[in-house]
Length: 383
Image (cartoon, rainbow, N blue to C red; front, side):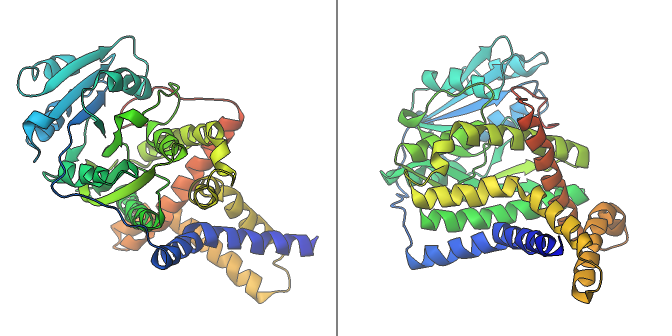
């Protein structure tokens, strides 16, 4: 019994180390041994259609459209499609008011069917060969579009994701945690791009070749399924750090938790739908990345529970095991107490808080997945 508990304990710790530290280190090393460059063209300006899906976004839709109209890109090569997904507030009226003021087109989806269905509706109507996906609250830096689409000068590139920066003027625990997590993800995407293709992208500043777009089921996660389908078709998915998007971070742990549950649940269904890419026949390298960066990441709550419970079972008579158990207990206590600790000036504890939150959300999503539950629509910015 003790021997088995020790195997579970060290195996769980090794898995956690591998997922969050080992995998990034290996990717970083491999990307330096055999880097793959991108034949980007700074003077390459293809025709672009920006698609903005919105549901009840009257508070932010005007600012988002204005941002896209004033972006640094040739106006005659730009089209903006605003898709209202059954909005019941003033979103439609605001969006319609921009028609005729530059390259803005309004489309209404009725009845409400979710963001994925809205994209399925809008993309075939887009005139350009390059489709850019923007959220209804996504504010691009002026040069973001130029930086994003220059990568399509390389014929091997089929999908490009930009750099998400979360802004949290209130300095909340959850906002700081989210910002730190995105810095970690952006670093990993840089390394994955140098190796070949990235595994995860941000739906607020993504672009792809229209010819590669494939209609999705209404419950599928577009900023996960579409990149996987691009890889499936033999093209690269790359990260462009120069294409910067700013969005306000959620200030509530409850809101962030619900959002993470939703995203994790849809990602798990996407992995099931695209499970053939987890096999090593299509691409051994990408299959390894998909296992390491996504599937094992979503299962880390198993390793966390395994490490804690097995550590408890092997405590008697061993000082090292007692020390490790105390360390784990302190970590979880720090996660729970981080909001109070931050008020006292101990700001670094937000890392523990966010780590526990995202893994708790992944656990919640996993059991919803086992129960066969799917999510198609949701309240924007509230999970």
